[in-house]
Image 1: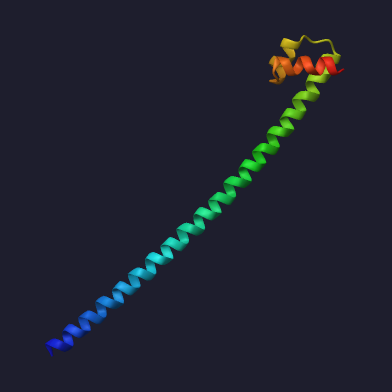
Image 2: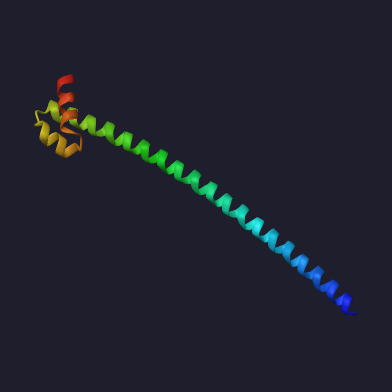
Amino acid sequence: KASEALTLRLEQEALLRQKIAEAEAEAQRKVAEAEAEASQKIAEAQRKLAEAEERAEKQAVEIAKKMIAAGAADDFIAQVTGLAAAQVAQLRQAR
């Protein structure tokens, strides 16, 4: 009976080790899946941010052009729009 108990105990331990290994593999799979999803969301957020920055830059340029046409000074235009003074000067020269 002792050998049967030992065999049963060893089988139980082997089963537990297998269940632990399966649980660890599942946890690793879920972590990898979550990391991939997070990476995709970060990439999408970065893309949206870049698009928003591009739109904001275009809007600033359009506002600067209107301010130039209205006779505003370059330093004031740069201050209001956030454009660099050199960029405002280029816009003025391109008129």
